[in-house]
Length: 298
Image (cartoon, rainbow, N blue to C red; front, side, top):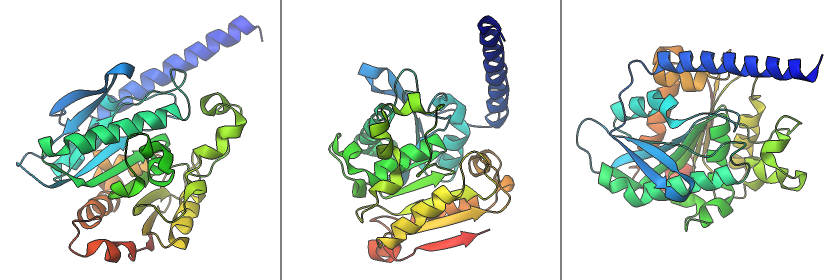
């Protein structure tokens, strides 16, 4: 096939995928509330985040910073209004943050972007009714990989003056934590020597916050064993980790629960329970939360 034809076909496929993706997010966001405010958190890199606040005034709500998926190549905070909106409806101050994607930036730069979004959130959470001591990070797919690295590899938060246990917890939805980097992902993750640094599993050493991992066992994009291995490593180091496996569920199922809770009815309650009972303000206390490790199959 002539190279010019291959280029045209590739462009056509990209256009079709973009159109399908736009239509999909238009559907899932059609009943979602818009953010209370949008803020530039990193002017040097032109990065912004959206803040979603509960309708009723709050002063000590849990705070969740959410990072979207997209194979580290695409995505935007506006597409994930359905996540921020749903969390805010349930009393959570939700932050959906943009980060740079490839080719604008590769690994580890997008993790650095996420760390700066987390630091901004901790510094400003109280202004929106959130408790900075109840600060969680979450993500779906590539976003879950980013969130997990913030909770395991201390270097990323150290760059913004924080440590992993400044986080009340990490929520990973269908995330890759110990994955193969082939030709398609190699440009994103740069020199082969730094590929191991992209694996959250590698950094589990006993200084992590509690984790909630949700994964479908029919996920053909990111194998559920990623979550199983990370959960086992965390519990092996005495850390609190809950793994919720969704039978027959595909890659997007954990995120789909935020726009249609009936699709995966156990996911949203699990997330809300995690952010309401985990962390320093938990009535049970941090030691009890750390001992609450469990594996659940829905």
